[in-house]
Amino acid sequence: MTPFGFDNSFVRDLPGAYVAWRPAPVPAPHLLFLNEPLAQELRLDLASLHGAQGAALFAGNTLPADAEPIAQAYAGHQFGGFSPRLGDGRALLLGELIDRDGRRRDIAYKGSGRTPFSRGGDGKAAVGPMLREALIGEAMHALGIPTTRALAVAATGEQIRRDGPLPGAVLTRVAASHLRVGTFQFFLAQGDVDQLRQLADYTIKRHDPGLADSPEPYLGLLRAVAERQARLIAQWVNVGFIHGVMNTDNMTISGETIDYGPCAFMEAYDPDTVFSSIDHGGRYAYANQPLIARWNLARLAETLLPLMADSQDDAAVQQAVARAVEVLDAFPAQYAAALLSGQRAKLGLRDPGLATRTTTLVMSGEMSDAASAADSSAASLATSSATSADDETDTTLIADWLSLLHTQVVDYTLAWRHLAAAAAGDSEPLRDLFADRATLDAWLVRWRERCARDDLAGGPGNELRAAQMRRVNPWVIPRNHRVELALSAATEGDLVPFEQLLAALRRPFDDTPDLAPYGVPAPASETAGYQTFCGT
Picture 1 (cartoon, rainbow, N blue to C red):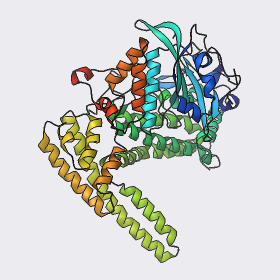
Picture 2 (picture 1 turned 135 degrees about the vertical axis):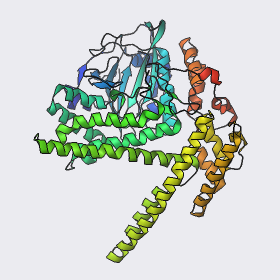
Picture 3 (picture 1 turned 180 degrees about the horizontal axis):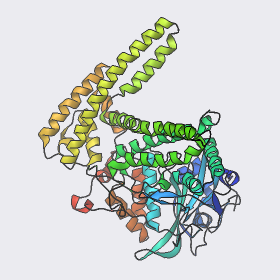
Picture 4 (picture 1 turned 30 degrees about the vertical axis):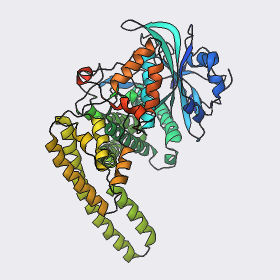
């Protein structure tokens, strides 16, 4: 097949981190989904991706001439238990492309057959779980959340066995990279410090090139990954997303969301919500996600300690440990700041921390002598004090709002969306969600007072506030009953519900009449006890 223009740096630079392997041939490939906007980002020839040629490509029967398919090696903590050798048991990295914006992107199969890492599995995937990856990935992308994305899903024409026979499929996934915390754990478990250093240097070159000349590049890498994960998990939480399987092999170094298996969006607000059928203890519950992210980062820190220490004497190692702990201890505050910034946007409030930083930079640029610097410092302290007061006020306001949603079993997405209508003067849609309207009304008084103070300091005013809130509080999310209906129909050969839902998910902030049904929650009786499965 025509070359894709691959430049396969992983194969070239990381021998020992993979096994060369080929996808298993399938009997009757058929293209179910092609992500044309993503294909255009990747500068691919759309004409060659359709029809029988595209089906054969995305099912793994033919490969681009410059593909070098490999199964990547990695380890991982799965629900807290360490497996030193996991790896791609049903996935293959085909190669890397430079997209139209100059970004390096991985192209990989999922469900393409057994590999040396399959551990007794069949290496296959079913239509439903692979189309779920497409739906949730595109929803996350439309919401502005860093994510891997589906380029295509192809049916294979074969039946695979799970609880019963299901039609098989292969997903083609695009990622900034497939480097994971578990990739680093693999080489630490082997005691191979040279390979670990080679991996870290490759990762820095690929994701944080500015660290290459840093005096402490590996500490810088840990810090960069922690900052990315703080922002990512805050975005998850602010839209009610629950990953479901936050194992270390499912935490990317790039800060992208990966592996949409047992995942879902929360409907009625409850911090203890768990959707994964295999998460019996609630380890990866909605509210636990930032805690687990920090735990996973601690595992990454362990792998980097041999590289961070100047030598292996006790003093050097203890110094490296102390520096790593500083990064881990900074994570909760980084996450809290990212979460609060997002929550303020959802409430229609300015971020005073951002305003303070911007003002301080401007003032510093205008002042050069010592007296001016002192004035700038005093002004910064004053605004920092105000910011701290705003932080405390807003944190309490948000906590009380979430408590209202929880105690009154209110739909998380609709509550935020209808709050935007309340900003524009129409509180009735929001009040209709609450059984105890008086308690809500009391909270709304406090929120409006806070908005009024914000407006005195240059805030947007009610009409603009409402418009801004509608741009961050979605109307359409992948509601679980809609997803299940679409996947069930697709499994039976009807792709229309899938295509309609996909089109809606790509417009999450619109509430036009055609999207009205996609904003309606399922009855509580239907959502009670809802579970998702990994599909393996």
